[in-house]
Length: 212
Ligand code: GRF
Image (cartoon, rainbow, N blue to C red; front, side, top):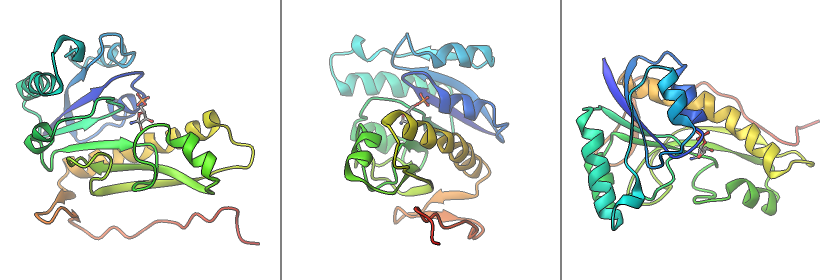
């Protein structure tokens, strides 16, 4: 059975969705860069080992990433799953986990990489927004896409209501992506494309506002 390590920085709701999804893998550890991350207690309640590698204890990004990689590799994971991990990772770190490192981002990439995605989507007046699970490459928020979910942006949406609608879908697509990874359904090929073992073609169009 494959092993994964999950990295968090905060409340850990995506991590919780992964812990509760009965995935075909062992969750070897949850690691946080912040000792006060709420998700650590949730992981412990689920009986998952936790560790903290505090970025503030290291002089620079390279030193932190080296310590983080050493802690991760101690658990010998097949995949490293970023779930609200709020640190930009060095190229060396990302390359070390090439094809084995995935992230969830609260927008339909390549639109709205970076922070404040919901506020920016509202500001631009887009009608459809969403979330993306992707392989991580050195290019921030631009790695090969595994799965996306789209949601409507309603006229009276606030940042909070839109974030909640997107988060609900994050909790559905992340377990699916990790399930595919751990059952060898997907992999990153040598050209940096996501390959599916069997052709998954089902899905629905989201048109918003709807046609009459
Ligand atoms: C999520 O919106 C995720 O997409 C982003 O950070 C947030 C983390 O939330 N990368 P949580 O800690 O999983 O609740």
